[in-house]
Image 1 (tube, helix red, strand yellow):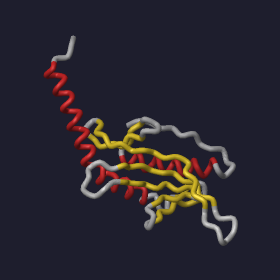
Image 2 (cartoon, one colour):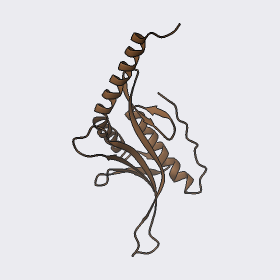
Image 3 (cartoon, helix red, strand yellow):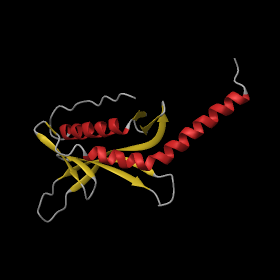
Image 4 (cartoon, helix red, strand yellow):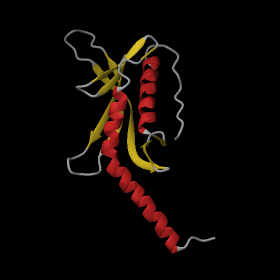
Length: 161
């Protein structure tokens, strides 16, 4: 059966309302994501410990860093949110600085799914609650460490919410 204009209009307006709500919630939910990443501080696996660096707001696991980034201008609703994953190589001499090499970047888009806030990761086309996204970021840091420490790497397994 064909869709009436009234049905179409209701659907479009509902989707727009969800998108407006997601955009309005995004800054608060991004702050929650940062707090959730920080909660991994002290968590250990493989005999190594996650560290949260407050100054740079970064989750560190050995030579991998997950850095939540939010760009925008104060007063504007739309911001760019992402998580950048770096591999950090120590300096070869005391006079050199560590080398930060971007491994990947997850571009985050806010959305409402089944009445709940979620972050859609554009690069993998999956959506996660903030809690799930923090866990995926921590798992990704462990994978980066394994891939760059001559250890068998764990393949990512992403499950949509």
